[in-house]
Length: 73
Image 1: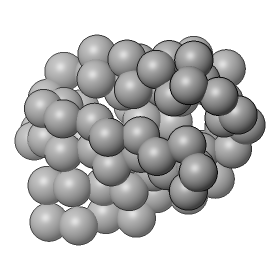
Image 2: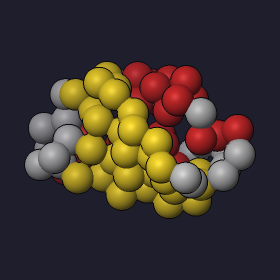
Image 3: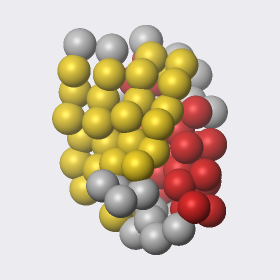
C-alpha cells in the first residue's frame, strides 16, 4: 500500500529528515520518501501502521501538520 502525505511547515533538509524518521518509525512502514519542494511524503507499507491517524500523529510529533492524505493500494 502507498499513501501520499501532504505536510505543512517543512522548510529545510532538517525538516524532511525529521518527518522521514518519524514516519519511518511507524510499525508496518517499509519506505518513506520526503519531497521538500512538493511538501509531500510518499509512504509505503502494510498493516496497522498505514492508518491515517498514525501518520498524522508521527508528523505532529516532528512539529509539522498533515494537510491531507491520499491513499493508493
